[in-house]
Length: 110
Image 1 (cartoon, rainbow, N blue to C red):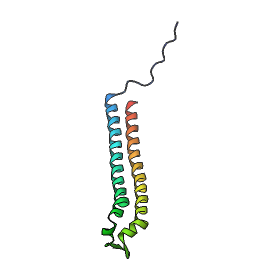
Image 2 (cartoon, helix red, strand yellow):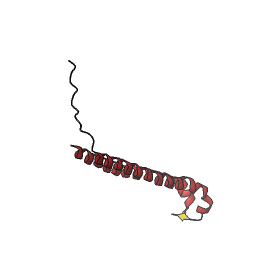
Image 3 (cartoon, helix red, strand yellow):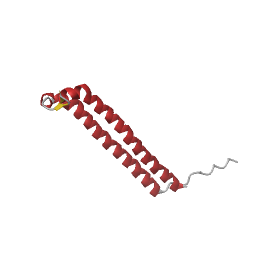
């Protein structure tokens, strides 16, 4: 006689729970893409535009130095570090929100 199949441990997924989890995943990636786009635009502005508009920015001075020189020597590197730090901090928050949504969805299934 063939052995009986093992009973399924997990019940059929709840459609409402699946809808919530899919919505949480979509919201997480929407936030991630928006944050990435904004920070890449900021990086482009500080990295490319300050070099492209160096002559115009030379008329503005920061601490006695032309803004174009300051951005090329220090500012662009500092802005890049600030972008990385802000991205890490914000993504940690987004990931916690997403993990909480997943945990809440898993608790509903029990």
